[in-house]
Each structure stands twice: as C-alpha cells, then as structure tokens.
Image (cartoon, rainbow, N blue to C red; front, side):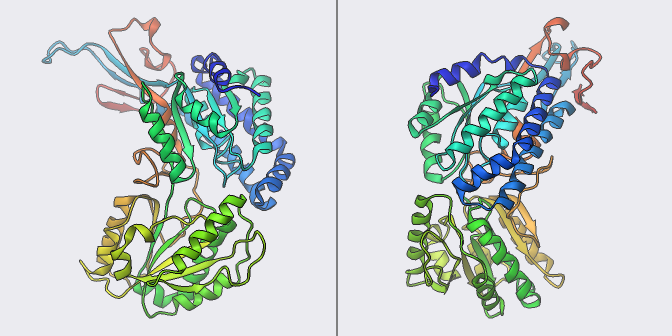
Length: 482
C-alpha cells in the first residue's frame, strides 16, 4: 500500500500544475467517460458496501460524470482565473506600474471522501473535480465505509488519465485514520477539502491550523437545514406539504447533508397529522454503517425522551435488525428558546423536529427563534400566495443570515450543479462560509493569486499577455472585457 509520504510526493511532481487548461479539460472528460463506462461494475460495488439502492447509485454516477464535465467547461471558459490588468499611469500618486493579476494552482490538495455520496462526494467528487480543474494534484483519503469502491474508482481514474496523456499521479489514494492525520500534517499539502461529521471535521480543522505553516481547511460539516412553514401554507396545503417533507427527510434514510431537520410550523393546523401519516408509509432504510445506525438510534431516543418533547412518530416502535425508520418529534418555541443548541443537534438519519409557534408577528416568538439559529447549508420558506410579504421578508432575512442557500416552496435535498450554486454556510455547516463545495466557484478554494509587476511578456501566463491570446474574460483598467 502506498504510504502518505509516497502519495504526496508523487502527486507533487506529477506536473499537473504546469498543464494547459485545454489539456486538463480533456483529462476531466476522459475520467468522466471512463466512470460511465464502468457504471455497472461500480454501482454493484457501491450497493454492496453502502446499502444504497442501485437506482440511487446509478443516478449518482451520472451526477459525478456531469460534475467532471462541468468543471472542464469552467476552466475552458476562463473567468475563474480572475485575470486583471492595470496599465501604467505615472500621473497617479503613487505612480501605478504595469500590474497583472491572476489565480494560479495552489499545490497538492488533500481530499477526505464522504460516506453518504460514494461517488459525487468521494474519490471523484466535487472537491477532487474542482481541485484537478484548478491544476492541483489530489491525494484522496478514502472513506472506510466503501473501501473497495474507492480503490476501484481511483484505479479507473488513473488509467483514464494515463490513456488520455495526463499524469496518473495527479490522483493518488490513501487509506486509514492515521493516514488522514498524516496527510493534513504533510508539509507539501497546501489545502484540505473535507465532507463529514462536525466532530471529525473540527479535529482536522484544528490540526490544519496548528501546523508550523497553517493551511486552509474547507470543511462541510453538520447542518440542520431549518424550514419555516407559514400559517397560510400550512392551512391551504397541509397534505401536500406533509408529503413533501416526509419524502425529503426520509430520502435514502435521511442521510443527506441537506436533510430538513428542524421545521417551524404553526400550531393547530392539520399539518402534523398529515406528516405523521405520510412518514408512516416511508420504508425503513439500512444506514451506511453500523456505527451510524447506533448513533442515530441513540440520538433519536435521547431527544424523544426529553420532558419538553412530544414523540409523534416512533421509529423504534417496530424494530427491524439493522433498519432505521422515520422518527418525528415536536416541541414548542419556549422550549426551543430555552435550549436552542440541543434542538439544533444534527441527527444523521430519518428524523425531523417540529417547533410549534403561535405568533408570527414582527418581533414575536418566531422571529426570536429564528434569531437563535446556527449556521446551515440551507434555509427554506414554505409560503402561500395569501401570505403577508413582510413575514416572508423577515423569514428570508433570518435564513439568509445563517444559510448559504435559501429556498422557496421547495425542499433542500438535491443540490444542482450550476454556476450560481452555493453549498456552504455559517459554522457548523462549513468552516469557510464564503466558499462553496458545489458549483463553479468551488474551484476558487484551490487557487491562490499572484500579481506580476512590469513583467516581460515572455514570463507572463498566456492569459495575461497583450492582445489576450487565450481569449479569456479579463478586467482591464477596471472595465470587464468578456
């Protein structure tokens, strides 16, 4: 097995940082093609190791290939480089020299694969795709929940790189908890991408910061994804809302980072009964690992046992060995305000918590509760046409303060691959809320700026040379030239 030091040093001399954008785009597409060519084999492996359905996994292969091709298009378009030119101007005080700024590759990136998306956030997931697109070689720390799949995926990607004329060592795999720690500490690693638990992510984040030369740690951690259901929405479409929420929080066993885990609902509508009925029809699910199954059962029973919580749907009522069933608990605003941290603890599995409110007036109990929300990947408003626009504005402002994506009349599970996408949020959802792990600007995490002053044309990156021979969007003397 490759040691961490061997893996990092091989990646560091792979030459990916010196490659042309057009070549990297071709290599990303070659990896995507190879992934899809081995679809059946990989889906079978993933199904055996993760218990996720073949249909779900088949769709995830498509998503992963789409991400790779998406980033190929991003680097071909070129605006991600933020190429900026300022011409000399001796009349300014101080005089301005010829300045040309661009983003360049950072160096070796360590990527920690996630458990719940064995393709799209794993060996060839968003972090890997965006880092390779940036020109950064990647060392992936495999997730122990799907080791065989990780090894096979890495082998297919390396073979595809070599066959397309690229450097196979631009992607190297390591395994084991100790390897993860050593990887973060390695002096040639320049940044870390992580998707996982708050506890594990925080430990690695602290490790990255405590190095003699600290490095950025881009972690996607725990997220509760609050939802605000307005009185009009709950009254006018209780059954539709209930069916949508039940489908979202139980999807694939509730093992989504965007699962709606905290829902503010008006008291006294038919929504709760409709939700309980819809959730009762949802099938149980084997979670990804035995450890996750035990942790979910312990967390669900713990919150359900509180004196200030009502158990609406008991997932443990009809136990099946190794299977987790939907759980719904409810409390009121007063209890939430008395202990907001406890009610915002993430339960990785099919559980959602309802918080009942009576007062949606300005400055009332709903506003006070929303002001106590922690950082989250998403925030959702479910509203009706008859709702007061001022209420929507207040709910929107409260959610935008803590979440990276605010949705209206949808559900947060499902993250589109797009230029405008943002997948991040305040702590503990992520360690750097200004950055995203999905969408075009995810590439920005793995780039660093350099400004060239009075440089000869021959030493400049082609994207900064006179006449714009690369044809990329540039800002010249403050004016954007697309």
